[in-house]
Image 1 (cartoon, rainbow, N blue to C red):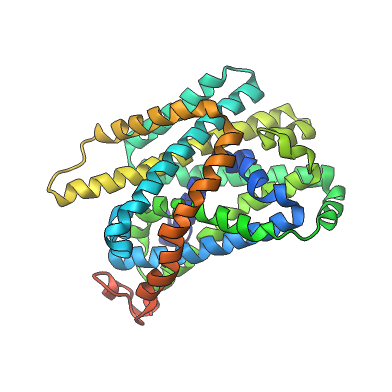
Image 2: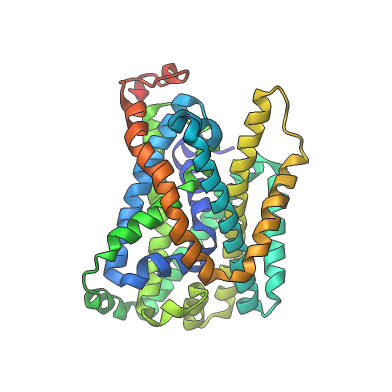
Length: 375
């Protein structure tokens, strides 16, 4: 059993991070497409902007969810957007399918490049593990997310420290040679926008939050927790710029440069588990939404329904994986991000912020639970 402070302040951020990391983030491909492709220094500015957007939106989201007692995205967005909430759901479902396809493609590439095994085997094992984990429900998912996130941090820190020891002498010149680039603003907003679907995934953890201060701090920390592994990875990639830009799996590019087969395998095993985390989190949010809807109609969610929902999503995603990791991230993510900015980021930072903080104490049914700390 985790301590209350852990569940209230850190668990939402760890679940958020687990959902954010996806196949592109963990492999380094998202880092390349959204950050490093515009140059080391502008990429760092874009990353800082994305982090600020994540923290602000998560802080407001968690406080609204606490006040509304909305722990899945359907009720949350019905309260925030009214009848137009369905537009968010359509965007979320499309992104879920895209992310699952990215996870499958990433798993296939990892198995192929690291172990020389068939691409299809990686896809099937990763997506099958997602379905299995979903069968066991929220408690198992929370435990898996928390434990695996710490393992992820351990290998990320090891990767960046080792890389900087080996190649750190070129890090400063790489940043210095990277001139100003106005693309950092667009890239930072884009990356911050579509990844905020992960805040919807983390809504089920808001059950542990009791006060406004806890919600705000959990949200602010979520943005930082979510981006820290990307920042570590970015520092490890910069010394290999610009050659690393064309690598399908940039993490393998760095690992091969380090020259340790043992560490390469260990890293890819942890990354493989993280892909499973991400897919699980995305579909779990859909299952939570369906469970609440059935509960409102006086019916429970059958145990068989969760893996069936997972099977439908995974089956569709499986048909998209042949597009490949690079094209899925470059074309899919770059387009869908604007939907989340319009249907989530802008509403939550305007109307949502006003609803969350218009009174000194929490509003709605949960408003009396804040106590002195919630003021």
